[in-house]
Image (cartoon, rainbow, N blue to C red; front, side, top):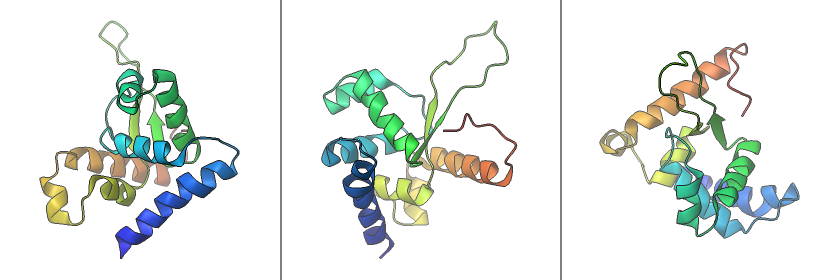
Length: 144
């Protein structure tokens, strides 16, 4: 039952809501990109690799990412720098803002499947991030 609702929600975002904002992106392409992002949840953004997977350019992947971030479907968490003498990560990390939607994209239907899934730790990381940001309005997560 919940999966049907999540599937309908997902379709309404890409087919109705995003075009309603005046953004002209093929719904099937954006949906496929969103599915790709589920497998990147909690990982460092790599526009070149995602662009190649889509058959497009890094700029196209970044544009699609920005659309999903702008509609609050994903969070783009910028890196935090403290020690400038060490090697730094300059690319942001990508997180789904809704763990239920993430689990639907990954095909995880129950707790047993979640615990056995390779993205289990990343799922928990994203959930914890959203819970912390929901409790403390003072934390600046770069507003995306």
